[in-house]
Amino acid sequence: AQTVTQSQPEMSVQEAETVTLSCTYDTSESNYYLFWYKQPPSRQMILVIRQEAYKQQNATENRFSVNFQKAAKSFSLKISDSQLGDTAMYFCAFMNGGSNYKLTFGKGTLLTVNP
Amino acid sequence: DADVTQTPRNRITKTGKRIMLECSQTKGHDRMYWYRQDPGLGLQLIYYSFDVKDINKGEISDGYSVSRQAQAKFSLSLESAIPNQTALYFCATSDRGSGNQPQHFGDGTRLSIL
Image 1 (cartoon, rainbow over the protein chains, first blue to last red):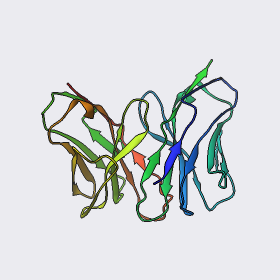
Image 2: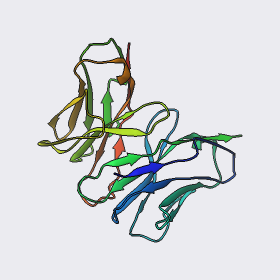
Image 3: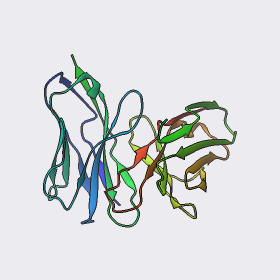
Protein backbone atom coordinates (compact mmCIF):
# COMPACT_ATOMS: atom_id res chain seq x y z
CA ALA A 1 0.00 0.00 0.00
CA GLN A 2 1.11 3.52 -0.68
CA THR A 3 1.79 6.01 2.10
CA VAL A 4 2.17 9.76 1.96
CA THR A 5 4.00 11.67 4.70
CA GLN A 6 3.91 15.39 5.35
CA SER A 7 6.36 16.03 8.16
CA GLN A 8 5.45 19.68 8.83
CA PRO A 9 2.08 19.96 10.62
CA GLU A 10 2.24 23.77 10.59
CA MET A 11 4.28 26.45 8.87
CA SER A 12 4.17 30.20 8.63
CA VAL A 13 5.61 32.71 6.19
CA GLN A 14 5.61 36.43 5.73
CA GLU A 15 3.65 37.91 2.88
CA ALA A 16 5.70 38.15 -0.35
CA GLU A 17 8.25 35.59 0.81
CA THR A 18 8.82 32.05 -0.44
CA VAL A 19 7.94 28.88 1.44
CA THR A 20 8.46 25.19 0.72
CA LEU A 21 6.18 22.42 1.97
CA SER A 22 7.59 18.89 2.16
CA CYS A 23 6.04 15.61 1.10
CA THR A 24 7.49 12.12 0.84
CA TYR A 25 5.77 8.98 -0.34
CA ASP A 26 6.38 5.29 -0.44
CA THR A 27 5.41 3.10 -3.36
CA SER A 28 6.66 0.17 -5.39
CA GLU A 29 4.79 1.38 -8.47
CA SER A 30 6.57 2.97 -11.41
CA ASN A 31 3.51 4.62 -12.95
CA TYR A 32 1.87 7.15 -10.66
CA TYR A 33 0.80 10.75 -10.26
CA LEU A 34 1.25 13.28 -7.48
CA PHE A 35 -0.92 16.21 -6.52
CA TRP A 36 -1.06 19.11 -4.13
CA TYR A 37 -4.50 20.20 -2.94
CA LYS A 38 -5.30 23.35 -0.99
CA GLN A 39 -8.08 23.56 1.61
CA PRO A 40 -8.76 27.15 2.73
CA PRO A 41 -10.96 27.96 5.73
CA SER A 42 -13.95 27.76 3.39
CA ARG A 43 -13.15 23.97 3.41
CA GLN A 44 -13.19 23.47 -0.34
CA MET A 45 -10.58 21.11 -1.75
CA ILE A 46 -8.82 22.90 -4.60
CA LEU A 47 -6.27 21.34 -6.92
CA VAL A 48 -3.05 23.38 -6.89
CA ILE A 49 -0.66 21.39 -9.06
CA ARG A 50 -0.01 17.89 -10.39
CA GLN A 51 3.00 15.90 -11.56
CA GLU A 52 3.28 12.76 -13.65
CA ALA A 53 6.00 10.42 -12.37
CA TYR A 54 7.26 9.71 -15.88
CA LYS A 55 8.03 13.39 -16.45
CA GLN A 56 11.39 14.62 -15.26
CA GLN A 57 10.45 18.27 -15.63
CA ASN A 58 9.00 19.83 -12.51
CA ALA A 59 5.46 21.16 -12.83
CA THR A 60 4.75 24.85 -12.37
CA GLU A 61 1.50 26.80 -12.06
CA ASN A 62 2.05 30.54 -11.71
CA ARG A 63 3.49 31.08 -8.20
CA PHE A 64 3.37 27.37 -7.37
CA SER A 65 6.05 24.90 -8.37
CA VAL A 66 7.19 21.48 -7.29
CA ASN A 67 10.55 19.83 -6.72
CA PHE A 68 9.99 16.22 -7.76
CA GLN A 69 12.81 13.87 -6.77
CA LYS A 70 11.71 10.43 -7.97
CA ALA A 71 14.62 8.45 -6.58
CA ALA A 72 14.19 10.04 -3.17
CA LYS A 73 10.38 9.75 -3.42
CA SER A 74 10.05 13.40 -2.55
CA PHE A 75 7.51 15.92 -3.87
CA SER A 76 7.80 19.36 -2.28
CA LEU A 77 5.67 22.41 -3.07
CA LYS A 78 7.21 25.85 -3.37
CA ILE A 79 5.01 28.91 -3.09
CA SER A 80 6.64 32.11 -4.29
CA ASP A 81 5.51 35.64 -3.44
CA SER A 82 3.18 34.31 -0.74
CA GLN A 83 -0.19 36.03 -0.46
CA LEU A 84 -2.65 36.21 2.40
CA GLY A 85 -5.06 34.12 0.34
CA ASP A 86 -2.56 31.27 0.36
CA THR A 87 -3.38 30.66 4.02
CA ALA A 88 -4.80 27.13 4.00
CA MET A 89 -4.23 23.49 4.76
CA TYR A 90 -2.16 21.88 2.00
CA PHE A 91 -2.45 18.18 1.24
CA CYS A 92 -0.07 16.09 -0.77
CA ALA A 93 -1.74 13.17 -2.58
CA PHE A 94 -0.63 10.10 -4.52
CA MET A 95 -2.51 8.33 -7.29
CA ASN A 96 -1.61 4.90 -8.58
CA GLY A 97 -1.49 4.90 -12.36
CA GLY A 98 -2.95 1.43 -12.50
CA SER A 99 -6.60 0.57 -12.73
CA ASN A 100 -7.97 2.04 -9.54
CA TYR A 101 -7.17 5.77 -9.68
CA LYS A 102 -7.65 6.20 -5.95
CA LEU A 103 -6.05 9.11 -4.14
CA THR A 104 -4.00 8.57 -0.98
CA PHE A 105 -3.60 11.75 1.05
CA GLY A 106 -1.04 12.94 3.55
CA LYS A 107 -2.20 14.46 6.83
CA GLY A 108 -1.67 18.00 5.63
CA THR A 109 0.39 21.09 6.45
CA LEU A 110 -1.34 24.18 7.80
CA LEU A 111 0.26 27.21 6.18
CA THR A 112 -0.33 30.65 7.61
CA VAL A 113 0.73 33.72 5.64
CA ASN A 114 1.34 36.68 7.91
CA PRO A 115 0.97 40.32 6.79
CA ASP B 1 -23.77 26.58 -10.04
CA ALA B 2 -21.15 24.25 -8.59
CA ASP B 3 -20.04 21.32 -10.75
CA VAL B 4 -20.13 18.95 -7.78
CA THR B 5 -22.97 19.63 -5.35
CA GLN B 6 -23.29 18.06 -1.94
CA THR B 7 -26.38 18.21 0.23
CA PRO B 8 -26.83 19.00 3.02
CA ARG B 9 -23.94 21.36 3.74
CA ASN B 10 -24.23 20.76 7.48
CA ARG B 11 -26.20 18.20 9.49
CA ILE B 12 -26.60 17.51 13.17
CA THR B 13 -28.30 14.29 14.17
CA LYS B 14 -28.55 11.75 16.95
CA THR B 15 -26.94 8.39 17.51
CA GLY B 16 -28.84 5.56 15.83
CA LYS B 17 -30.44 7.67 13.12
CA ARG B 18 -30.20 6.79 9.44
CA ILE B 19 -28.48 9.51 7.45
CA MET B 20 -28.11 10.01 3.72
CA LEU B 21 -25.65 12.40 2.16
CA GLU B 22 -26.19 13.22 -1.47
CA CYS B 23 -23.87 14.17 -4.27
CA SER B 24 -24.69 15.26 -7.78
CA GLN B 25 -22.43 16.44 -10.57
CA THR B 26 -22.78 18.24 -13.85
CA LYS B 27 -19.28 17.49 -15.09
CA GLY B 28 -20.29 14.35 -16.98
CA HIS B 29 -17.65 12.31 -15.17
CA ASP B 30 -17.96 8.55 -14.87
CA ARG B 31 -16.06 8.19 -11.63
CA MET B 32 -17.33 9.29 -8.25
CA TYR B 33 -15.87 8.99 -4.76
CA TRP B 34 -16.78 9.51 -1.13
CA TYR B 35 -14.12 10.61 1.37
CA ARG B 36 -14.10 11.32 5.05
CA GLN B 37 -11.90 13.96 6.72
CA ASP B 38 -11.24 13.98 10.44
CA PRO B 39 -9.47 16.88 12.22
CA GLY B 40 -5.71 16.70 11.75
CA LEU B 41 -5.96 13.96 9.17
CA GLY B 42 -6.04 13.80 5.42
CA LEU B 43 -8.95 12.42 3.48
CA GLN B 44 -9.73 8.72 3.67
CA LEU B 45 -11.61 6.92 0.92
CA ILE B 46 -14.92 5.34 1.93
CA TYR B 47 -16.34 4.11 -1.40
CA TYR B 48 -15.76 4.70 -5.06
CA SER B 49 -17.68 4.00 -8.24
CA PHE B 50 -16.35 3.86 -11.79
CA ASP B 51 -19.80 3.65 -13.33
CA VAL B 52 -23.37 2.92 -12.32
CA LYS B 53 -22.76 -0.82 -12.06
CA ASP B 54 -19.30 -0.67 -10.53
CA ILE B 55 -19.07 0.15 -6.82
CA ASN B 56 -16.05 -0.59 -4.67
CA LYS B 57 -15.12 -0.36 -1.01
CA GLY B 58 -12.39 2.02 0.05
CA GLU B 59 -10.20 2.06 3.13
CA ILE B 60 -12.92 2.71 5.71
CA SER B 61 -16.23 1.37 4.40
CA ASP B 62 -17.49 -0.26 7.61
CA GLY B 63 -20.68 1.41 8.81
CA TYR B 64 -21.35 3.03 5.43
CA SER B 65 -23.20 2.10 2.27
CA VAL B 66 -23.57 3.84 -1.08
CA SER B 67 -25.91 3.97 -4.03
CA ARG B 68 -25.10 5.14 -7.54
CA GLN B 69 -28.54 6.09 -8.78
CA ALA B 70 -27.33 7.51 -12.06
CA GLN B 71 -24.11 8.63 -13.67
CA ALA B 72 -24.54 12.01 -12.03
CA LYS B 73 -25.66 10.91 -8.56
CA PHE B 74 -23.85 9.08 -5.81
CA SER B 75 -25.25 8.96 -2.28
CA LEU B 76 -23.65 7.86 0.98
CA SER B 77 -25.71 6.35 3.81
CA LEU B 78 -25.03 5.78 7.46
CA GLU B 79 -27.55 3.13 8.46
CA SER B 80 -27.21 3.71 12.20
CA ALA B 81 -25.06 6.74 12.93
CA ILE B 82 -22.56 6.69 15.79
CA PRO B 83 -20.62 9.60 17.31
CA ASN B 84 -17.24 8.56 15.85
CA GLN B 85 -18.71 9.09 12.38
CA THR B 86 -18.73 12.80 13.13
CA ALA B 87 -16.55 14.24 10.36
CA LEU B 88 -16.40 16.30 7.19
CA TYR B 89 -17.51 14.26 4.17
CA PHE B 90 -16.45 14.99 0.62
CA CYS B 91 -17.74 13.75 -2.69
CA ALA B 92 -15.40 13.89 -5.68
CA THR B 93 -15.55 13.08 -9.38
CA SER B 94 -13.02 12.36 -12.07
CA ASP B 95 -13.07 11.73 -15.77
CA ARG B 96 -12.32 8.45 -17.44
CA GLY B 97 -9.00 8.22 -19.17
CA SER B 98 -5.36 8.33 -18.29
CA GLY B 99 -4.46 8.33 -14.66
CA ASN B 100 -3.63 11.97 -14.31
CA GLN B 101 -7.22 13.06 -14.44
CA PRO B 102 -7.58 15.04 -11.23
CA GLN B 103 -10.45 14.60 -8.83
CA HIS B 104 -12.84 17.50 -8.41
CA PHE B 105 -14.38 17.94 -5.01
CA GLY B 106 -17.67 19.23 -3.70
CA ASP B 107 -17.79 21.70 -0.83
CA GLY B 108 -18.24 18.99 1.77
CA THR B 109 -20.93 18.02 4.28
CA ARG B 110 -20.12 18.59 7.92
CA LEU B 111 -21.87 15.86 9.89
CA SER B 112 -22.18 15.93 13.67
CA ILE B 113 -23.61 12.95 15.52
CA LEU B 114 -24.63 13.53 19.11
